[in-house]
Image 1 (tube, helix red, strand yellow):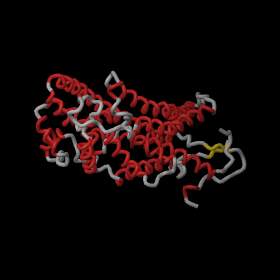
Image 2 (image 1 turned 120 degrees about the horizontal axis):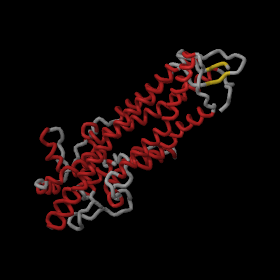
Image 3 (image 1 turned 180 degrees about the horizontal axis):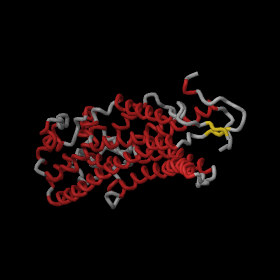
Length: 314
Length: 85
């Protein structure tokens, strides 16, 4: 019998089976399994939120710039369109280059080419590169465009962090950071609501017992036995809610979850790649026709694929 | 649920340590997912070439090793789970 299965010898009498009520162990376990991860998660999501907010601020100003340019000059429309990486051809080239992380918004070439770190733009189609040259003077366009592309390109546009639909984002959301707050709130809120009561109780109970032993007054906490169970099941419910939340807010999780649920694990990677490709090409709905070529429509964010990265952020 | 445990000490050890193991790994997986998201967002070009099967497997393995570290001490003698009442 392996050593870790050795327990106390079975004896006659009544026994209870509880997780180790020792205070030192409880502090060790809850610190390692909850409190430290919680602090990290809070810091990480605060950073993500800040990044998302910056991206959205930039994007709002860019949309305004686009709007103004659209009204001022028809030649600028083509330039913006080329810059926005919105054509299927460009998307295709971005998708092809995505695996090695070299695909990016053409303006990235301008921004990052200097340090030699990235060789972006080389695999982007010649036409768009020419258009990039023309748009370089429009420096106000670069921050959000390139932030968006920087985020989405290396992952075939599927790193939709918590994103649901890229295209509809700015049509329905009035406050720019509303969705980010909602998404982060749901993910973090569920985690904290589910686990914090149990973890607090796991510390408080042995702490109360220890204090009672030290002061010889006995434990003061007289919580009924079912409190343990209820709090524990709250924690368990987090495991049930997480798949639902992640598949609701994050497209990257949705297909794998569905396929794993149906036990269709074989060829899962192929399916994910295929879905990414179709989404990159046609948007969320595969039934939608590809966006019109540049010059045939205006360039607001509705079909600007290059802007997908931002929505992918939040 | 029940006021007493009738399945013996070995089953009690298995039950409770599995419980701790799975809860911890659930939380740590949540942490690892958020780290993954963070790296994608804030350092995409540094992280993208690294984000391969090997690194992700390492991260998941780390989660399970840490969870095992948390769940094993009671079995190895740090206190006891099976208590006579």
